[in-house]
Amino acid sequence: MLLTACRLSKALQLTLAVVKPDAVANPVILEALHQSILDNNFAIVRLKDLAWRRQDSERFYAEHSGRFFYQRLVEFMSSGPMRAYILAREDAIRHWRELMGPTKVFRARYTSPASLRARFGLTDTRNTTHGSDSVQSAQREMAFFFPDFQVEEWMQREEPAFRLGRICYDSGKHVHVLAKQR
Ligand code: UDP
Ligand code: MG
Image (cartoon, rainbow, N blue to C red):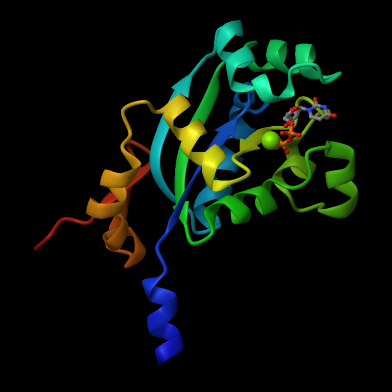
């Protein structure tokens, strides 16, 4: 009883998830990824289809500048349309990274064959999805993709209803919204 109360009172966490250009280019894979998000109990708080210029890509991945894969990565990430999500779930950051699987696709296929990168990834660079790796990076990355989204405001106004499941899926907009009060 007490345990249940504690579980219910733990606030949801937000994370930034991105479907990279390799996956958006294939509508069947894009749809399968979207369905995996829903099947794995993430609530979709925001969704945005967009494309990056090279400078966006360089800025987002500045922490990797100098690494051997940096040029390849920034070129790839500005090579075509992407889809960004803000996802909510208890421990969303960890759960989304688990669902994606290891960074390197061949390792993912070996160690986590059911993961998204194992199932859909093409190469170590074209690895289907991105996910924030900490609370700090989630904050920075959500602001990068969704500059109008106010985390604090969402936490105060919407998180409790999302946590209690008082939401429904808007199949036109492909996001979860608060259930209408009767
Ligand atoms: N990447 C790559 N080669 C590598 C490592 C990373 O091309 O050896 C790319 C890959 O697209 C990866 C991104 O760089 O997703 C960012 O790397 P990071 O180490 O942050 O991995 P992630 O957090 O995406 O798992
Ligand atoms: Mg990373």
